[in-house]
Image (cartoon, rainbow, N blue to C red; front, side, top):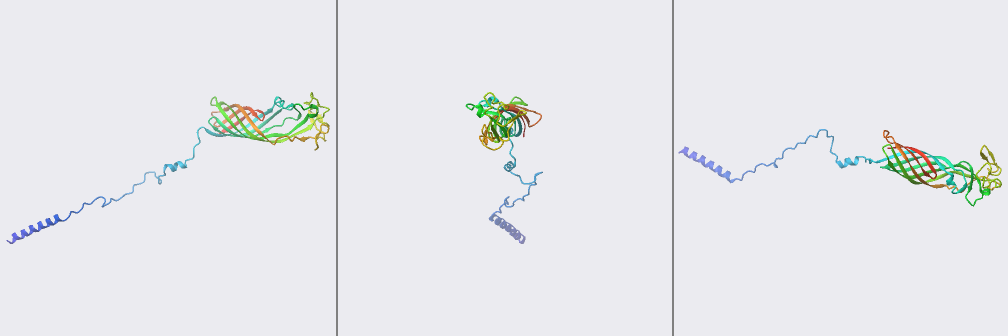
Length: 291
């Protein structure tokens, strides 16, 4: 009896525990957010030295690249310069033609086959001493002067535009034009000739037509001491004077055409032969280098 009662009590106690468990709400299951997984830092990539720089910042540090057909250069030139008699005869009856020289240095910018050239030049403009007589109505006996050029020259700067027409890799032609300004250095010294000596026939002959008191020695006129003293110039009492009509500056007109040579094996080197007009006719050459 007693054993039967104990067994019944044990069964009732188990049923009561089951009933309580059914009445209580179930415990929530653990989620991933409730327990975050530990984080691990990724190892740096092999060869990485620091933070990655944006591509835009790298582009700002890259120096600008020159265009493939753009170059710069420098050249030196030497020219024979002339003002021929036929040109002077347009303004005078008697004159002394110019045969002289000039030189200069050029800096140029070349884009494809076009050059923009800045030049600095010296051009000797002093012909030999001799007699000059203006065009009509100037009479030879009173208006013929013995003229000496003391360092007459042009110191110029000009800007020119030059086009190239290559024939092959070593030969081509070029042509161009430019304008500039020149300072006129030196003096034009004039002395009136003796009216009793000078005629239309001999006005250009300094051995026959020359100033009063002068002498002719070894193909040259030697002025008298009185002529070299300051004073008003007069055909009968001559005094050498500097022509006040010499301009202090002159505009430069530059026209040129020529051929140019290159050596394909020698990078940057070039040579030119050219002629034209640079306030006087010229022929000459130049050697340059592009870089």
